[in-house]
Image 1 (tube, rainbow, N blue to C red):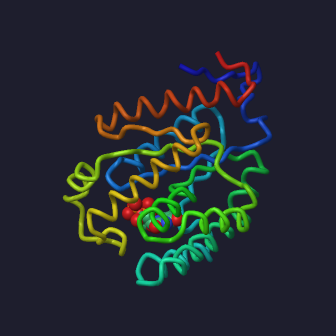
Image 2 (cartoon, rainbow, N blue to C red):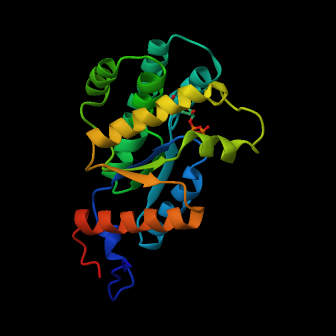
Image 3 (tube, rainbow, N blue to C red):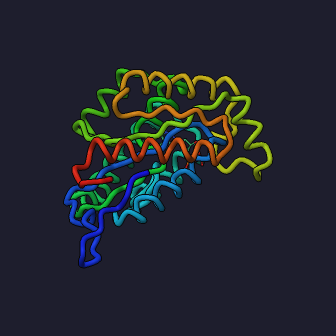
Length: 229
Ligand code: TYD
């Protein structure tokens, strides 16, 4: 267990950490992403860090407008990819980077691994185009840590079955599409083993939550020099 290091004045020393970190959460639906985001945020706040929770597509007024467009209108996959990166560029410039510069930790529900998995892996856009676009739009900017929740698609679909009707066009896609999304995510994790923690999301939510917090502790030990016990 990681312990907060509190000085005699009662201020958490961690608040003095100048640089924030970007943590992204990825995966297919039904993996409990939202509850794990809440868990990680609570843990970081308990340790004294300021956190900002955000999402993609979205996270800025422009990004939210783009979200409305891409989630509810059929379009060419490359148009979709460009819009995802347009939203992401704005998200990085307007929301994420300024927060990181203030020492805030940014927790995002999805980032660019989703574009590789959904638009390239499943939607038919080219993986190489996606890489080029990433280089051009983000200039190498990426999360320091990514939790990728992996689940067989049959399990994912049975978990989301009870939910109210599809809330966006992606939820209406056939099983084969999600198999390809899953494979795209796994490929990303193989290509980025230092950043991406591939988490088996099949166990119970609390068991998966334990794994997530253990990985977060490990990350903090290796990235922060804060005298953590
Ligand atoms: P999300 O808000 O996570 O919705 P859900 O709760 O249904 O998972 O993501 C919205 C959808 O947008 C989701 O189906 C994945 C898709 N998406 C892409 O296709 N490409 C992207 O780059 C991103 C960020 C999301």
